[in-house]
Amino acid sequence: MHGYLLTIAYDGRAFAGWQRQEGFDTVQERLEEALLAILGEPVTVHGAGRTDAGVHALRQAAHVRIERDFEPSKLLRALNGNLPPDVRVVAVTRVPPEFHARFSAIGKRYVYRVVVASIAPVFDRGRRHWVRRPCDVTRMRTAARALVGEHDFAAFATNPGYERKRGTVRRIDHLHVLRRGGGFDIAVQGNGFLYNMVRAIAGTLIEVGVGKREPAEVAAILASHDRRRAGQNAPAEGLYLQRVLYPRPAFHVDHDTAHSAPGTATETGSR
Image 1: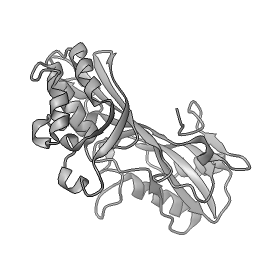
Image 2: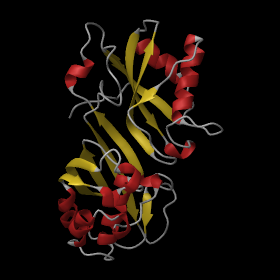
Image 3: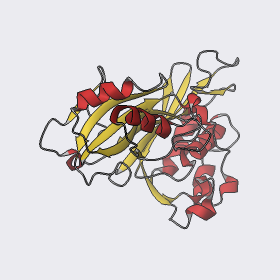
């Protein structure tokens, strides 16, 4: 068997999320249909994680194991030739048989994008969350500091009771609020995330930004472990899975490692 890591970009507006669901159009199903067209037999695509309906990806990761030995460049072209325009494989990398897109990952990086304007934007609709009130980025940065490090993030999980069965302690390595043209981005990187954790963090920080909360409240919310005290989940449309992180040894193979589409990096990365 030959293992391949697929790095995938998609517009979440077109799909009911990543995971295959009966009766719904999903990214996993589209990739599996493309592989079926190429190979003539069904192949399961294993993703690094699920994204919900409306959530976008810049560099989602998934692996496949197939009998046929493909040059990565040929597999890249064949996949994109069988995919709709809303999803693209941007890189194909050979990986050892033991590699697993989910279990080999050491972290993820997300970005939540916000446009601030008194009138709803036309061209950012569905790609950035619209906030009509001015946001104080300095206040948001102050509040965000309380979330960096290893903590119990039950207060920022949509279903903390269920999540506690697996544990709600996670580590955030970086959390930045970055000014962007017409708004800002909330960029967060960590070793793992609870269900809707990034959207809950974004929603809470936005409430700080517009003056609904004081920055010091975020530390108290985190310590409470009570989801009811945090802000509402920010809408899915602003969320992007930016990168899945792997240790470099996970990519070690003896030959012809990777091929990317023009203008893209050659690996999902450990940066």
